[in-house]
View 1 (cartoon, rainbow, N blue to C red):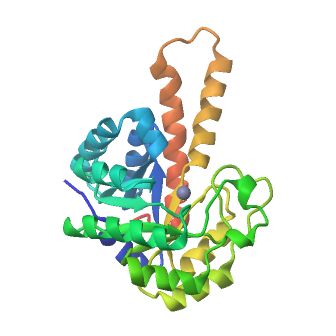
View 2: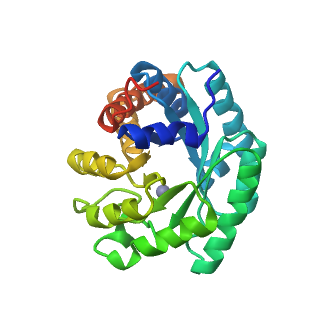
Length: 282
Ligand SMILES: [Zn+2]
């Protein structure tokens, strides 16, 4: 049995200059693939699901499957709520055995974001769990391109962490959700300023798909300790499914279609774990 909390995974990552991959789950095959990759790489792992994915799978279905995966795994696994938009969802997740939550009330005015985040931090803290929170806006690739006005202000980040007690910070530093049209350029200077002001706070990089490897390495060197990956797995999975369906117009067994998609995710996730430096850290 190998459950881990967010802090148990990210404190050593921050100290050891690597980042733990947080991979989004969309169905059973994804969960199996991601856990298999972690086992093969001997890598600590964060399994996470967004509110939309939880609505699709059923929060309790995901929680039960993830719990069994963690129980049977030989590597430490945290079960994490990605972008929890409300206190209610965050509490439901904790009740179902998640070991980590993100509360994302970043769309609210600053003071309300502080208030909502602090409330979640207190509730999770009562269970001995830590919270990831968001400040600034991490939007879609279309919204974020060339729009530094949405990026996180380092001084405000310091105030936010001091007032909320959030453990990890999802900061807006040039990454985005979805497929990048132009090559993203992370704002390393901004990240360094945050790191200097908040030396104990692991930074979380959202939209980790499609960022050039060199920029990922640099971000980790500065203090990014959790990197979220979803889009690249989506692309790998769907590409494989198209291939299988195109190659055999008569195939109807879902296992023969989804199985190869699952294998494609294993490979994609293993590659990320090696890039993030988590391989061999379990
Ligand atoms: Zn995100």
